[in-house]
Image (tube, rainbow over all chains, first blue to last red; front, side):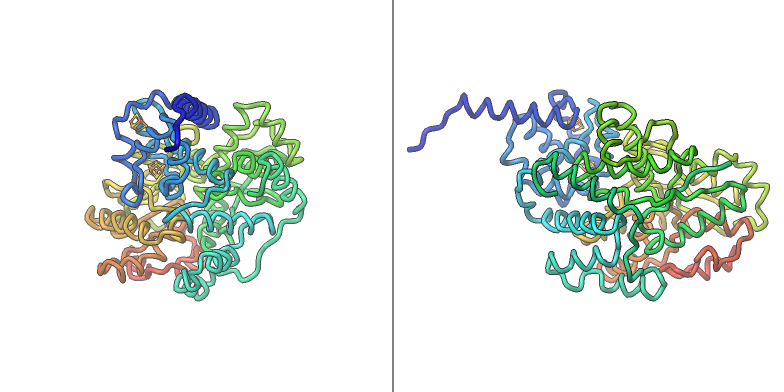
Length: 193
Length: 284
Ligand code: SF4
Ligand code: SF4
């Protein structure tokens, strides 16, 4: 039988809660689980853990569980929860911090989150390469990585017909300044974006 | 009035009609827009979802470049507006972060200039000043003004009330259009989830379009390229997935203002939409 060190586990949970509180700047303890954030969340129907429960898990310091849920990725950053929380908790910021932490820890985004994370990477790679996001290139990179080869083919065709599909990227003049932004972020993070 | 102008990455692509109509409307209202030289991507959701420093520095560079003009900066794209305004908020409240970001970008931002939505740029002229220039009142338009999220939330960047904003309504009314009272003004369209989780966005946009139709609107009017893309280009997808037969034109508010000011349709790119706009425009 394996042993379980309760004291140690509680200490780690406390540390995680404090870290999320610090990085988000949010008073996690103030959340009294009224559920208003969840009630107004437009995408809660597609989440595996409702926003108020994500908050509760962060309060309890359940790092492994909360960093592995789909909800932190499927959150659309609409800030409806934030605007409505009676306790003034910026729930969207907490979601965002958890997403950033999961990324830093190299935890793969599960389920519905997977393609969100692939899209974010494709988007940032395009920005890093050109200084501006190139829509067609970002979509192509997303399709290849996500294995949805024809995703957005119809919208792409429509954009082409209407003259809205740029076929070549636009590069800024001082691309070096973008390089130093990405280099600094990678360095501070201690790993790739 | 003069502003520096941040067009954003969709300006030569999916949202080119928003950019062209913004420029021409401002010009005819006597507002001079000076494009921020060598601007780069604001990072959008991908940036702030990935790394705090990256997000702050991507906004910081553009804010620094805008500040070189000495003019307050405006962005037509609601997402870009939000990133710039949020960046400004962060960089002015945290001097250490500002110093760090300025060093990284080499484009020092001091906080001297403000970030405004293009909607506020127009409203600062005053509705009367806009009304005076109207040559073709939009009497046949009954618009559902759709604000989405990015201009109205969170509090640090909000340019209007987060639950019942009125600024698009006011601008449209100043050019003779009617606007409807409806419930989905600030419900999220799902933004960039459209690419990764299309079914989610189909459901959200269905609710928005349905609510607009039920309120008696004959078009939707927005100030955000992401919203426009999801509501216009994806309307066919909603119909084919959910068996609806929506056919509701979606405009940028600048396009309609342009029409009222007598600007000819071609330069407003009114035919670049997925949902046909011509029958409604004939009825004006
Ligand atoms: S609305 Fe605020 S207090 Fe209520 S459950 Fe959500 S985070 Fe907690
Ligand atoms: S910010 Fe995220 S969690 Fe909050 S309401 Fe919007 S989608 Fe839901």
